[in-house]
Length: 436
Image (cartoon, rainbow, N blue to C red; front, side):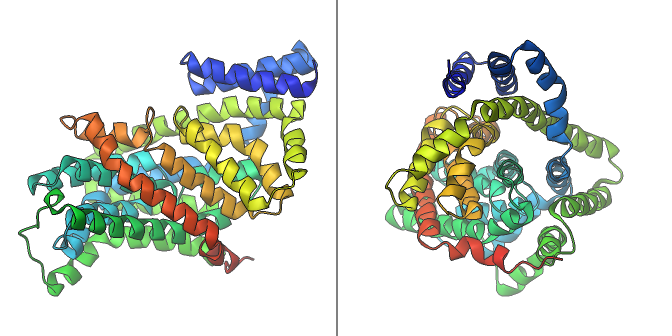
């Protein structure tokens, strides 16, 4: 059996293990080690098990992952989530569908302090959904807006998937983080406009709020979200000006988040200890997947599957944009069964050489992949954001939440089409980045 065939069998074997509900970290590790043994023998497989995970984790850029996770949890402990929603409500609440728009704005603000979509959806949803239901909002709009707003957590920097993509594709993490900023804000605006159109078509979805706030109240509410601006300036401006690397920016953001959380809860040390425990569990889950991924990726390299696939695709007489669209389409069925981190780890070692070979921007491709991962977070049967919202609004039927996300999926595809048609939206900011 040729190495390429063994590589294909390994991929099928991985999918089979996932179908058996084997945890993704163990499925990746088992498929990787067994594949390496099949290619090079038992001693090499044992050596790989002992060395490749260490070789994977010694990379300095991966330190940014736990630091960004800690930063997000600390920001939440400092009250950033509730303050962001209340401020957004004072600015947008009087508009038709204003509370749903405010939840999108709050998600965008919290996304600037957290690299997790699930965390963004859960923390903002817990605050926003009860408020929307109190004012008579339809549960589909309320839950759909919170679930969709959470998607911004993995696009607006800091973004854990972009850090992992940069590591796997050997691209600048700093440029990727900057590249996600304008598309993230654009996506938020598309969601807000989409909500306005949706409510215009069916006004019963969102009764007008009886609360009225003047410009004085709105201006006075801005200091309540000072934490978002501080973290944004430390992380994004630090990276853009070249003062910090992405890892250094993550460390500074975590340090500032710790100071903010301590000032808010200095009398409740139990809150801070729980925050670190939650961040540790999230980090352990991601890094567990990365251990299995290090073995599986080495197996793919030894099999030659990425190189053969890249050569085959580049020999096709097809415009590069069509190849990119075909690759992005693959993420739709994958997203129905895999989480975002697993999708990246399985696909990027195969797709990155293809993208480079056809001359497509790997930075733009990274943003588009994250956009497709956003789609996966709303699509059944996995749809992690949907289940997170179900957890914070347990009396809302799951079918209503999925129905509420459907208009936002349509908006997501509009955003992806805009980014494909106008690459400058994604590439302008990283191309102007200052580096030393």
